[in-house]
Image (cartoon, rainbow, N blue to C red; front, top):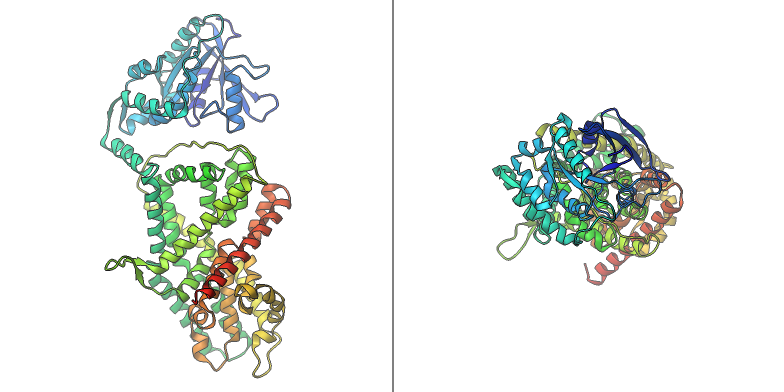
Length: 622
């Protein structure tokens, strides 16, 4: 063999290729970029037992020769000899993760089917054994028809044996074109991968069998989605049922502080500022902290247990039906917390049209800022009753409505994605494969740290953005002072400013107070709640103690009709995101074209569906 001959490491991402490359080549390697692309090229020399050397190329991780990313495109071209200036590898070393054998065998079959001299490096066998899985390399070699060498790259175990196998494979190179094996379809390769992996198992622990059994159920194409949506249904039931005592306690605490301020300080603007501006406004948002914490407790537990990645696989089928892939699921799921990290997470999506579509629909995911809005309206208008079959009424109606609002956001996002992928973001659909983490019990300490971080973010928003906007709104509502017998809101600057918008939103059932809340809600969704609370606190007659002390939910149920409340909920399912999110979209899309487009279609959807909800509710006599 001469030094001009080449070999290549191929395999799925996270198979340990880089560690194996380093173990084989040591310091004899060079790093550059492939011509015309930003994909990194790593090459080094492997010294064979004969003293001769071969150039070894570490190809980017790939799941298939049907490329869905620049990395996979480079791998396909190099292996097939289609990359100009790059030699076609004579020997292919397929790197498999022993702990995820079945998944990695899908691509391995595609590589072996080329008919080239091939060696399989069964890597990370130590981690597989740690997880209770012992494999038979000889059985695997018999099934695949190529040599299989067990390795632990990070400990240099099996490296000498792998080099020997490479040398032997190289000596078998015959002149002329390699003979390709029969080509299998992707479903056929997946079925074969399952059978080959089973045949290669010598022993497995009870825990490993349990995890495999869980995957069969949780990833089942029909049972899996039912379990997922059933779990989410339980989550939203818990958000109301478990949080109510804590929310009531916070509301009572804020009410007690407000009573103390009223009893301690003389009547006047400073006292009104504290009671009407700070406590009524910001306090009306803070009381929903328990709901936020409970929601995130479930989300963090899903992530820590390994179920979140499996939920992404389950959602891939629905994503494909609207022109996206499961790659969009994680960014969209992140948007349930806040659209900003969700939009930033789209950087992992290689296809630009997929990424743009995901960015544009991310605001339709029901972020945590919407939860206070939903919670206060549901508490005001939806009774705390149980529904269900006769004699089995066990489903909380409030939690059911909350679940329906989240589902409405998801359905709306999928519908918009379908339209976008067939119009302004039309492009080729891409597949989706990702590594499945091990199942494990969430660590209590990690959960508590995560909950504290998210609670602190919520409280910080309440103490900064919401506080600032609420104070500004209180000033605009409080001046100029009303004449005796005149409504303070009507006389105020804010009241005058809201008249124009009130005319626009009146046809969809919104009143002046809602129009007044929609403008500051652009700073942060929760501000809609604090704006309403501040407005009603300012508008309450000073001698009407009952109106002053009534909670926001009680105020809303007394002032709004049910059709108006339902229309308000529909508006916030589609209403545009906060200004910070718009700024992030502008940064991620490098211009104002797509942020303006996003604002336009979201406002249109919000107005249309709020109107449809209101008109339907009125027609039904609600």
